[in-house]
Length: 108
Image 1: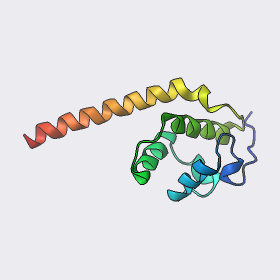
Image 2: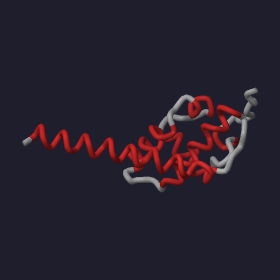
Image 3: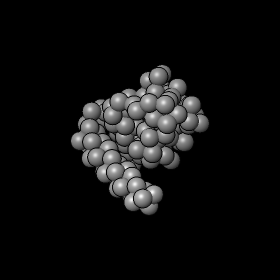
Image 4: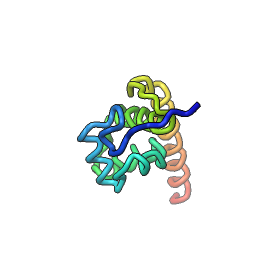
């Protein structure tokens, strides 16, 4: 059975503090419902682009924990998502490497 979350604002989501909430708002994510509709990896990558720097991978794990909470109502510490998050980041790096290799072949 799915539990209902009680998050009315971003800061009500476990693991989401003022700083990450502010970063999310810079992307136009203003409510928990908007965050729930986003893929954590896509959001993490968008934050990196908006902020002009790569964020610590812990931010991805935090977004994954938030997504879990918003879907299940279960609060889980962000570090429980580190293994899964590392796999996601490795797959994304591999995807980007393939694109770069393809693009370099096209421009040759």
